[in-house]
Image (cartoon, rainbow, N blue to C red; front, side, top):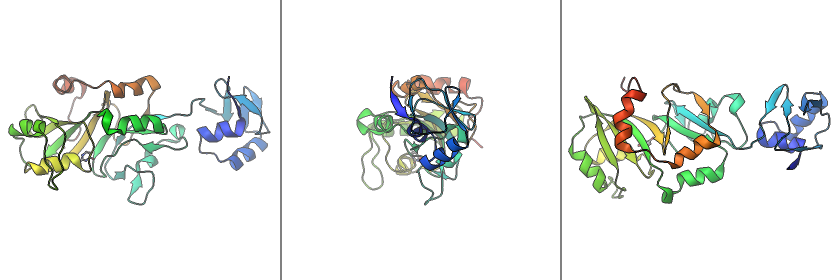
Length: 259
Ligand code: URA
């Protein structure tokens, strides 16, 4: 049992400010366990209370985990200073205080991006020591060369001399200019710079997995789905890269960026 003030409970879980909450309570638009609450300083049980604001039930848990299929043209940051933030794509019913993208995808990249307000989880995902693998599909300007497999595995040295960790790369079936790439780190523009270092150029890039969390084909560009805490733990159960690539076409009927 965890007692908390009604206004604190609502403000921690929604975008309503304390003054808006007070106003709504005065208008009789807030209920707790079926009864109208006109006072916002009443204590409720944060684990079990059934609180509604304007008829919408407020979830008891604070943390939100949203898997987004990021489209092109949006920036992976919380503010709009460099372009429109991916947070603008989060539908109102999934919004919560303190959401941020846990990881980065370039403005022109698409695919799996986790949006959360759980700083502890984000730290676990982003911490270099956890080496959470991420798998991308790239469309290249020039055809894929078999020598890339060895070069990537030995660790690419980027144009500025920076050394990358060993990475896996694999051509995609009969598409000569497409490949899967698996990285265990996240340097700035890393995939693009790795292919530039071997004399190729990434035209399109899509992230299809973060750890064991795979972007579902049914999640269209710009769409979001809420994850349960148990799904989020999949992040820490990495995929088998070879098996994943081999099975990819039974999971995806078309390559999402091959247009
Ligand atoms: N590597 C890149 O170059 N861009 C991304 O968006 C992600 C990885």
